[in-house]
Every structure is written in structure tokens, then in C-alpha cells.
Image (tube, rainbow, N blue to C red; front, side, top):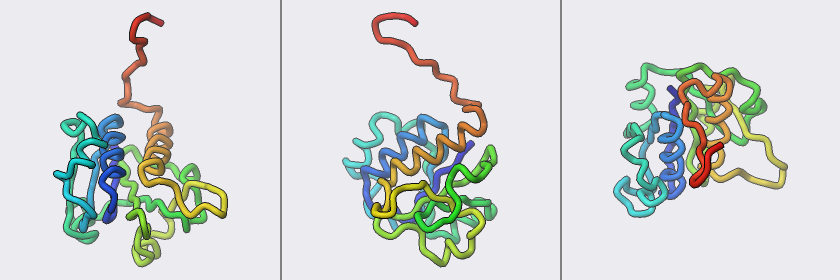
Length: 163
């Protein structure tokens, strides 16, 4: 099982979209407070559609509590500042991938403590960053691809015809 960790997310629509991605992939969503919204807000519920019952959401008062409650796991840190890309690493079957808040990313103190597991999604130098929910989708699907999408079995079906 994959674990997506959001460190102090600020925009409810992004977190709702990420929750939907977690629902579709079976990933657990970990939210480290403070959050820039309430989990009861209309925007977050709308972005997650009717998938919320499929998402295991865990919340933590801070980063240290997240580490303690998860037995200090190895965490891949998604940051625009990393030298290695998200495709340069081999993800464990049960890995944690953390993303920072939309306006500032993951605090540099945390990044410095995890230099070897920092990853980035390549982009042109003029762009500051990608949308948070897009970044999560890119990275989690690479991690899942490395494990042959093991538990993702749904086959596509046409609405009116058959393949």
C-alpha cells in the first residue's frame, strides 16, 4: 500500500483531488496540520466527489507526531529543490511520499534531514512548480508502475459497446 503525506496543505480543492487519487489507487492519505481548511468544507468534499468512503485519511498535529505514529518510516520528499528525479528511485511496496504546502513546499529543515530521499518532477527553469494534485498523481503512478500496478485490477469498459 502506498502512503501520500501532505505537509500543511492549504487549498481544499487540491486535497480533495488528491483524496480522489488515493481512493483510486488504494493509498492512505496522511494530513499533517495545520491545514488551510476544514475537512468538512464544501470545496474539499466536492473535489473528492463520492470517493471519500474509499479513502483512509489520517491526521496529525505536526510532523513529529506523523513520524512517531508511523514508526519513523522512510519518506520520499517531493521538492523542486532535489537533484534526483522521481524516476531515479526504486519505491518500496509500502512507501511514504510527502508533498509540502502549495505556497512554500516542505520546510528546508525537513529536506536537509532527508537529502537522500528527496525527489523532484522535472520542469523548465522558468516554472516555479506544478499543481500539488498533479505532482501527487505523477509520482504515485510511477511508484505503482514500478510494482506492475499489482492491486489495481479494474479494466476499462465502454458505456454502450464491448471491446
